[in-house]
Length: 343
Image (cartoon, rainbow, N blue to C red):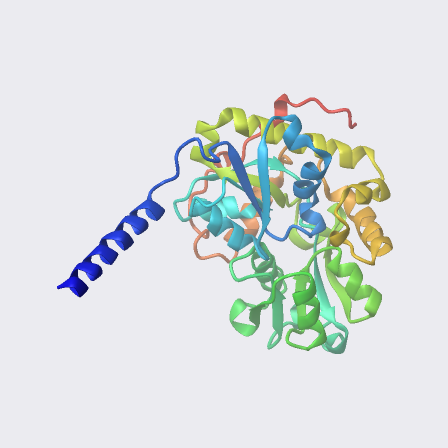
């Protein structure tokens, strides 16, 4: 009986502990903290996220912001939908893809007017892979399945006449894991960003196949301006947290203005050393080449949403044939009220 009483007591204690652990935290505990998930914080295309923190602009706006990172945009998107974070720094195209699935997400600030992505071909495979028309039977690296790199890869291949059934997409992440996949010949080509592009070019392990770091290169590859890196949130959050949304937009636009009015070297001085390690010169060079991709005011380019919808509609089963209300995938409401010095 004594043993049974002990078991019962322990069971009651365990149940109480579980209930306390499962109970929601008091509203005052961290209720003001805003967590932003970045789909690869060290990627230069997402530079404004960490730079805003480094410049102290979040604090200037009275915000308590925590920046977290996931290797791929689709992982960051999942964190947002699960309610684990309040915002995401990722590609704008996710807002269109999610609307087709019944999820209301909108971009509040547009960072990049072009993807900043580059399709790199492994030097070992370059002899037989000279354009996207040659990807049949090849393995192509992307950050994650369902990520923006997979969207763009599928579109480029289809535009070159190769359907998705004739090649393999392999999620390999970014940065060091992408470089390893190239060196180990696990992928024949793959889509990545700076500074990974410059690192691969420096070592000679890969060559540029399709370059979407510039407006001209993007228009040639995709047929128009392609707004990419952005800050997006669930629409319901933006509507119920207008003050916080406005402050976040103001902080990010101040950062875009800083980028537009400072040199790559000056910007690199503001970044944590682990973002460039022992290759500061390489990082600065990659950053300098990437600066033209950033908007100065955070606004959506006029022809951007239509281009992105055209790309996704061409191959995505979830978007193709669906009515997409582009006006609900982004808003200039918050950035339009911010005055900047950049011309």
